[in-house]
Image (cartoon, rainbow, N blue to C red; front, side, top):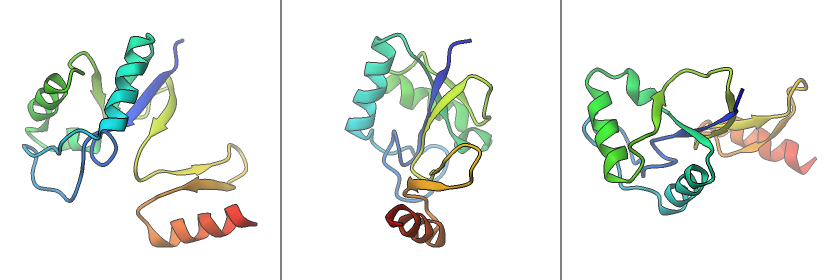
Length: 122
């Protein structure tokens, strides 16, 4: 089974500065857009992983944004799947498998971020 790369939309692939409704998706983040296009060119399976899809009426706006940015073939989900090999997300905190040890990340929760930075230094 081929592992997929899951990429968050808001704040990772598209600029995000707060919720403005399903019709508003920010401008692309150039570095991430280029990275995703490289993965596609390399034949990797890339999936858009976004909570936005659970909002009524969001799907056509997401598809339009992807089409306008050359990513029309990508699948969209809000569910973690068995093929998920990597997650790229602006809210994630990386945890070492089977240990609970925090490796790092820039999660939105101040206490998580502070604790992660403390553990990384130790």
